[in-house]
Image (cartoon, rainbow, N blue to C red; front, side, top):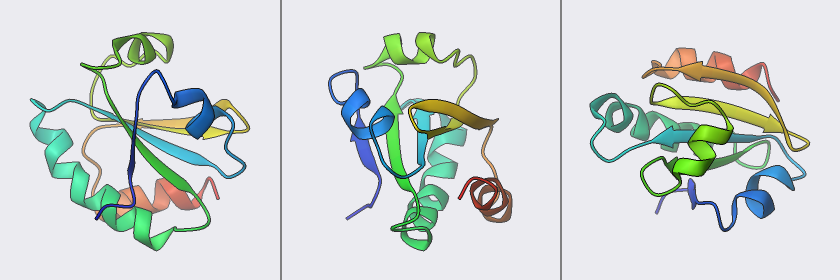
Length: 107
């Protein structure tokens, strides 16, 4: 069971924008090879940073409006939200150490 929550347009505000902890959102798609490479690293990070940060995934095929709203042009795109605002972002299938470095800057 993954600690990464699937979110969509319907629950994005509640789970991401109204969160009291920073939230990392992984914008991805089923057909995206690099997204599939990144997924296990995101799962590991979700366990490692449990309680410090929330982890969510948005399927851009199902929630295209969110991808447009946040300017997602390439996937995977990782976006960190703090207090309902975009704090930082990274694009691409980061290595585990790159992902950890990115996250640690935002906690």
